[in-house]
Length: 248
Ligand code: MF3
Ligand code: CO
Ligand code: CO
Image (cartoon, rainbow, N blue to C red; front, side):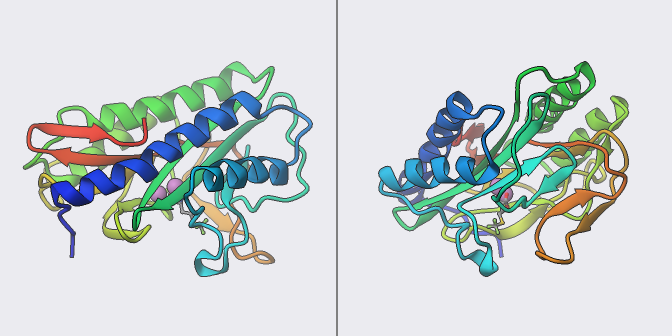
């Protein structure tokens, strides 16, 4: 069941979404080579809680971090820990904030210092995938038009589209219907309606689409081929005449 948010609910949802945006802007200023992924998580925890919000990732299905901090070949769900961020790395920081009974969810991939041209292109194209995916979206748009546009832009650039992880509806719960894959066929999927809130989150690799989950921690998802991956996510509201990005 895809929930339709009332104007009142949307007003409540704006705050956690704005907190996600501000947290990521803060992380962007602070993140640097030499930090551990745990130190990034500490920044996220402090910022979100200082806003009176809850980092809802913590404890979600037993997840230990406040953020997912995924370095290079880690696609998503990088558990914060001792890994030291190095010059030349790309680091995705995926966060959720809960406030007013609603949740916001956003992710950025940061380039640390002297990043290769190829990896910079990956990060840029992953962001472009989001915005190209959203082009022309509004009430009546078939959901998988977004998916198809994301996939097309990634593959045209020679990149892989992760299959095992997808975007999702969001609201009172972090993961609601519908699933929002980054691959699919134009003209298919449910038609979007005003008041739907969805997370669109391209996860793109420099190689193939296959991923493997770390068997010890049960979370860390790496590319099967070791290629680097980037992730970009916003919480989006479908409005009567288009859409609004709530986490930007
Ligand atoms: N923020 C992620 C998403 O985009 C989910 C995080 S999983 C958790 O859906 F376990 F870390 F919470
Ligand atoms: Co997220
Ligand atoms: Co999400």
